[in-house]
Length: 216
Image (tube, rainbow, N blue to C red; front, side, top):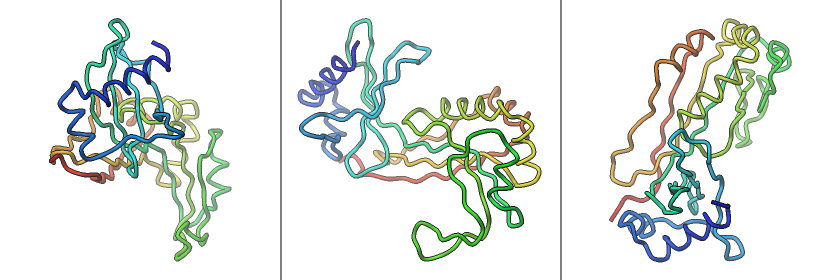
């Protein structure tokens, strides 16, 4: 299916609401349109089950509508929401500068700051220096984002293990989850991911935020 076919099929479903859950979602939240065009943040064609997933931004929210399609029948199989998952490596130090932390790894740093720098809110300063590595900012499932991050970090195992030992490096996960019916679920760590994190000496921390309107 082309992007245009996927968009047209989703627009049809949002109009006709053939799935009861589509009607439930659209009663409380709306997709984003720009110049009367339905906005899609990402189309995932790389799933092991061969389904296509289209992630659509939700108006004034940080989570996404997730529409699953069968490319064989070109039909929608389900409509759901997907949390906004921020999955990244973070190393911090009260003694080392951001430049010194960056020098420990060959990987690209997404964000960094020095102890004493002003925070984005402009009201306080950081109490420590830090570097953040977040290679995947697109909407995706948590498990895929974690696997992709680990694959990236493994490209510089020496540097990451040094940041772990000298700057408290670890994996931070922040999730913005839709609270439709109070059953928000939670992250799943498979044995392989746990083993890969252990090999790098990594801990993982979760910060879960519940957002949005409940079903009526």
